[in-house]
Amino acid sequence: MYRWPLRLYLSIMKFVDEATITVQAGKGGDGCLSFRREKYIPKGGPDGGNGGSGGNVYLVAKAGLNTLADFRYARVFRAKNGRPGAGRDRTGRGGDDLYIQVPPGTVVSDRDTDETIGDITDVGASLLVAAGGHGGLGNACFKSSTNRTPRRTTKGKPGDARQLRLELKVLADVGLLGLPNAGKSTFLRAVSQARPKVADYPFTTLHPELGVVSVDPGRSFVVADIPGLIAGAADGAGLGIKFLRHLGRTRLLLHLVDIAPLDEQHDLVADVRTIVAELERFGHGLAGRERWLVLNKIDLLPEAERRRRREALIDALEWRGPVYQVSAVSGAGCRELCQRVMTRLEQEEAPEQSLADSVTC
Image (tube, rainbow, N blue to C red; front, top):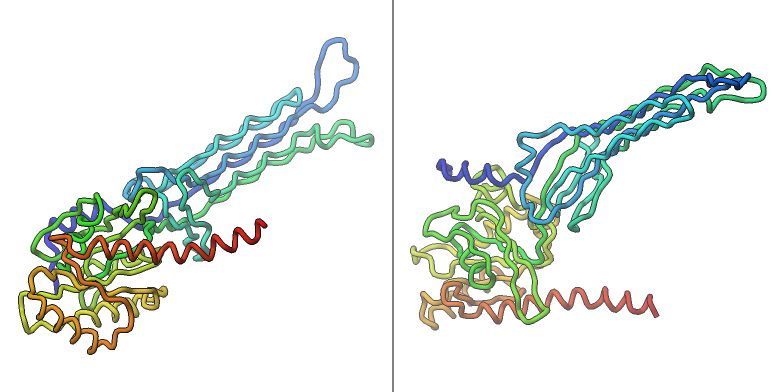
């Protein structure tokens, strides 16, 4: 069992991917009971105005935010109430809407019913999570030919109150999987401008890291690196299981394997099966997602030994998917792999584009 040193706790506190908040929309203003009293006008009448509507509560995706840490301290949000109506048929002022900023990729659900309310993925997109109450009716609304002096009004309606569960899932095309020190962070540094921490001890990656891989002008994709998985991660061991949800949006998984471990008797087959077992236990369809095997650190082995270990691993796993050999340190094989990934992602988009074109025609 890994023990988490203080540095892990301090770093994790800076990245929060789940939060629970309470939102309260504004109450509608009450209707007004009023009658005209004007000089030289012999007969007055009802002129009570309606109340203003309460403010709505919206969640809006803001560029640059990548954590829900702000909600560790501010958890209750209330929109303004509507103002009551007034005489002379004056409607009360509506309450101001409240806009709560969240990171793109936030999934919003009702904590009490587990109903998914929405998924905010685009920067600037907003989601209504609590509607303000309608304003009450003034007595002017109840006048009629048979009731010329109505004394009836209605109260403003209360606004919605909900407890929301916010869950952040990073937006990435490709996800990196592997045991601690498999070289995922080094690989991310090699293929993108991201600069995650790299060191020779486990769990140097403490929260998801994103990098944009530019293959050619106009051709790029986003890679997500999460903390390494270990056996028992589904039961809470290590860090990776906490962040596996961030791979839920990815279309392709790259499974990095350290093909040159310090212990020559190390079982590479067990390493691969450990990751697969944790994916299956986590669920949510990750185990069935397309996954490529990437053998890292080939620069540490002679070509013959490298070939022998590769073939032994493929035979033992009965692997039928793509297998690539790279060195994240020297960059060998990285560009070719990125080219293949880009082509694969474009192949997925092509049928959708063809269908859209056919509909247009």
